[in-house]
Image (cartoon, rainbow, N blue to C red; front, side, top):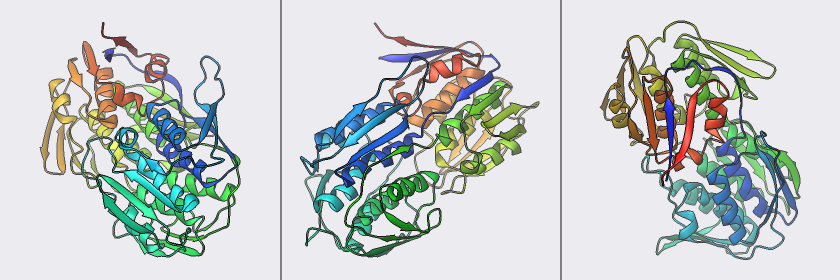
Amino acid sequence: MDSIHIQGGKRLEGAIPISGAKNAALTLLPCALLTEDKLTLTNLPRLADVDSFGHLLNMLGVSTKVEGVKPGEFGRCMTLRAGEIASTVAPYDMVRRMRASILVLGPMLARAGESTVSLPGGCAIGDRPIDLHLQALEAMGAEIELAAGYVKATAPKGRIGGGDFSFPVVSVGATENALMAAVLAAGRSQLFNAAREPEIVDLCKLLVAMGGRIEGIGSSHLIIDGVEGLHGCTYAVMPDRIEAGSYACAAGITGGSVDLVGARPEEMLATTNALAQCGLIVEFHEAGIKVTADGGLRPLALSTAPFPGFATDMQAQFMAMLCRADGDSFLEETIFENRYMHVPELRRMGADVDVRGRSAIVRGVPRLTGAQVMATDLRASMSLILAGLAAEGETEVLRVYHLDRGYERLEEKLSAVGATIERRSAG
């Protein structure tokens, strides 16, 4: 099993290219199920989750072709075609590997009139039920059956008719599934209190490029008029705002200066505002965002929230950075109830963090020290990488397969800006 070794204490300086967004890619890939035509996605990140989703689509009858990438380049181009859906069942063996697999439920229902998907797995960061996915589809006329660990959705007349649904709480995944189902419905659908994340906007833009009819893009009220069919297109995956924020924290915790090439300021204002409040200099320019440490880090009070609030996917990285702040910081996790699993590992490195329910007090310390630590989920693993970059001595991060789910060629990118970091394989 691989591990990542870091010799800390190096100031990071230079440019880091930002890859295509994992969370967007996993939403755009299932759109291939909505048409018989070819769908080509560019700027697709090379990640374990993307590969797993591609394998799942292959099992459903979608052909995938990946163009070669030149050495040193990031991202890739994949052409998908679902000329005929060979199976409407997404089995447990595939779905258990990542929660995003549930996103084939809506498009398969819309295209084939039925869809059977295993209840999902993924990171163990808290209870994330799919009730809202099912309720939204029921509002559009689907019949839902749960049995033996699977959910089966059926359109009684072979095609859902559309309908209105108001989300009681904001749900990114449920909004995505509902959107993909609604674009081929026989009538109009309205989604109220829909998620507004940039990845939702990216999905809407792709569906419109494929011939979908969607109003209210970027708002919490989406109006979708179903069409008879969609066509193929070529579409570029948006840059990863979470990856960009993570590397911004790397500049902060090492006292460095990093240019995030390709990052879009308008998609990560909550993150850049928090960075500025922490004492970092944040500069927007045509090619991306430059983040520079200017003296010591200031403590913060942060609470996670749906977009445009502070992203839960950035909480762990900010916690690691705030371990070096001059004072006490207060973090509140409102999205997932079990997203502090990285805290015991940070403590092994000398961090002073006190967790109280969904809140955490982070007391800044003069130094962190290298240690052997274990990643528990994707973003937690990045927090340990950040701590290792600033720590005295060597840090070894185990279970880095979590990192491979969401960060494209992390060691290569960090090495290019001055980090001493390498991947080692056991045995």
